[in-house]
Image (cartoon, rainbow, N blue to C red; front, side):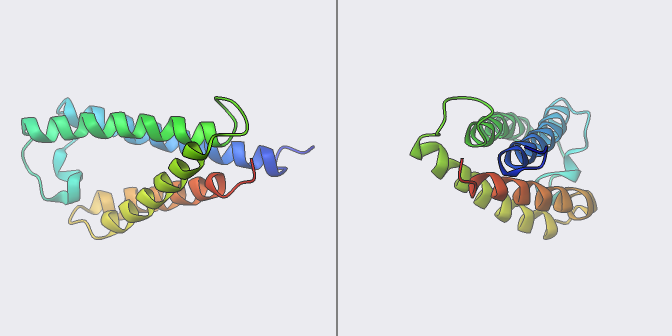
Length: 136
């Protein structure tokens, strides 16, 4: 079996998704800590790091962590195989969420979201779609 055979390609896609989710986790932790400018997130409309924005970034970190687990479970990298129906559905929910998030990134007032995060979320959507639609 070659590295890019179907099961390995699904797992490779899940690993790419994991790496990209991790990038966004670091961005949100950095934003919550005041390191990453909040004006580059949340549609580019926030100019001040408020407690609400900090908490929202923390919630985003937890959500992204859950997304990692769901996608890795669906790809057979964690958990038991075959994945339960809830994990299969959750992988599609993650993919749909990312597709909507991509639209939001491209509609953002922030050039960082439009030109950096937008293309990254397209890639995340694509690799999550590969995982969600797999026969694993």
